[in-house]
Image 1 (cartoon, rainbow, N blue to C red):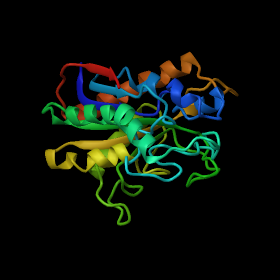
Image 2: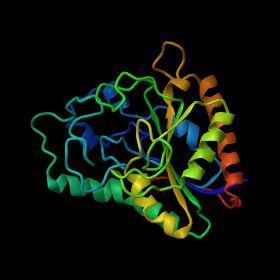
Image 3: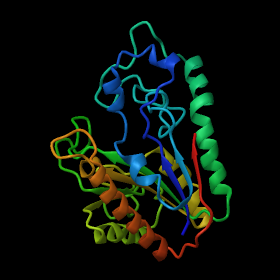
Image 4: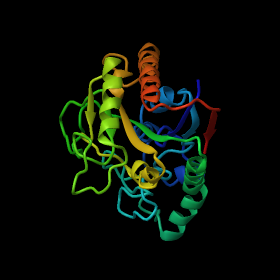
Length: 268
């Protein structure tokens, strides 16, 4: 059974092109800490019509940022998630370098996303991530223990519009249906807490409602996948989470009355 979904996994890679890697002061381990742990392992095997996953680290270019964003955590970040400086003092990420990376590493991914939405069989976008089990210092929930699954539609904690955020990308009733589907599989779930969604979900979600489609960001707590007292995934735990996520998606598809179709996977 193939589902008419687009699955986006933008933060799953630790790879950095050699010409960029030479200018970085971060160690390989520090670069790996910018990866959404297990996001690819969990979501790339869903029976979706289109699955797109990043080939390059978000430190090369962040696919989940507005291409016009130029601050220190913009589309070409100057500091990583932990506030560490990424580049050596002699390297300047100027506008020419930003444009080069956008053209080579950013636009091909987004071109493929855009093309996917043009197909009449596509009904939903799921932008998929993982996150720390405890909110880091710079997070809105610093020090707080997070739910297993966070679903986001750019709304409030009930999935309704939030006056400070703009249009929601999925109707509240669908958000609650999805929440119940994940809860049935044993996950604890929050809606738009601590995050209401990133650029991919919002940018494409603003187009989808006019075509009867939905756009949702999903974050999996990566503590579910890690071996006890370890920073590394457990194959047994990953498989358990992957199977439960699959069942939740099948339930969601049935409730949305979605028809099966062909399957395509690409690394961009």
